[in-house]
Length: 118
Image (cartoon, rainbow, N blue to C red; front, side, top):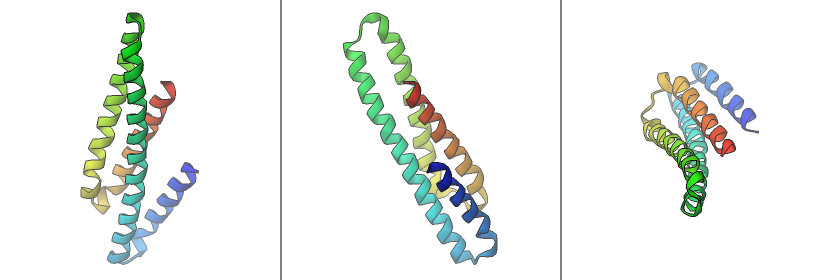
């Protein structure tokens, strides 16, 4: 389902070239909204997982603490990266959009991979 949504967004952005400025801005706004929603959802997933890891860390044996802390650190780094991208989202211009979106999509995939490895 995510792949279909990404493909549809890509096709719609390819069509931006034949549209008026107002239509282009509207489509870009819609695309930004969709990316924001996906990124915020990933941040929420990371937050929930980090809360669980903190609980596990508090109750873990000393042998397990290093591993749990490492996972927690990885998730915090991923969360910071996503948050930074969310902060830049609205400032991204039409010309920068494709590269920015590709970067956000890659970051979300990395976060999802990190969550699965947890």
